[in-house]
Image (tube, rainbow, N blue to C red; front, side):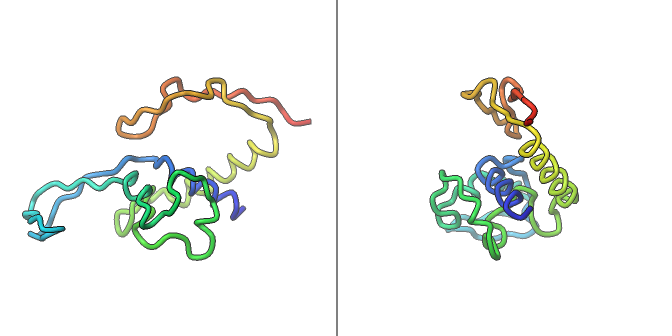
Length: 139
């Protein structure tokens, strides 16, 4: 199921499950010539990180092979956060997503009801019409 997990990772790279989050600066520091004072709120963006061509070449191309081997460098792929604040549900999400995808692919033919459905970010990506799909059992 490694290939399936790589495909899921690439889908989350292209559309992160969360847009980002806020953190608080614990000390004064300088970043690219700007002084960030202690106590300021900082926003990190998973979407910006995941589409940075320095870390993910061909950012608009679906390429599950970018997760083969050791995968991306640390903190360049963060759909579940990173470090000590990484999502505690990561392993549960992995199992749930792979089992769901496996059963969907081997058990059904499926298609999107609205192939051109728009996605809004509020703050997480949400399909405007709920992303309905049409399922037909495979015989």
